[in-house]
Length: 331
Image (tube, rainbow, N blue to C red; front, side):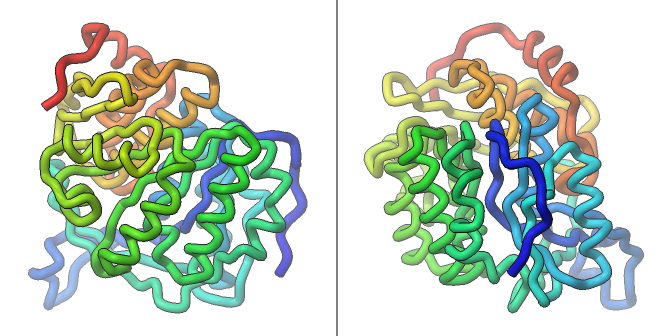
């Protein structure tokens, strides 16, 4: 197992996870029996979050395993074009994971995944050991339940990386991002319980994640239950235009500026995660960092696919400035 050589000085943000080949169908999947047009792009929650973190001003590196197929070169080129350092990515003699997507501006998305025996699923503690210096030197780590569900070895890698960053005094952001087709509820709950005490920010959705993982569809109660597991702060997305931020002292609803011309909501949550974590790593307080996160997420739905539109930070800051300062009592 080898990785390209690259800079080893500290990063603001490291993102541990999987990069996917993204295939966009032009018609709803259930109506595609006679064929449909499609185009190829690159996404996955790790790449989406890493791109957003880089756009928000953080020096960001991707920690991942990619395949040896013909799509690996353009995949890594796309990540680099988005400002993400890919010099520490490892290779495996496997195909890259992929998914077929049909989406709309309301976030009603249809997905078909191909992940079995993918390069990303070979992620293991052997990789995190190779990245140990990077992990101990970073200001922040982003990882997810999707990454932990790729394989037992990937789950071990997620926990090892989170423990390493936390022990070194860094910030950990975790998104459970529960996918029932990828992992069982009990396994996802177990990983959540083990990683929550290490997190500075746990970003989750309600009702989807909250019902499956903490047994409630109430955002305030969900945030309280995640904090009871040990998360220092919790951000709960509650559908379009609603986000609850609970820092342990107060749970409040952050205003989400609307996008006047939405195209596709794929990756908006990852954009929030990447932007917010980047701004925390760069020294912004939580409420301000989250305000930038919701503004970036709103702008991101102007593009198609997970990295179809990654807003420049100047645009994110300008949109955030249009929202009345402060927060509102949570739902």
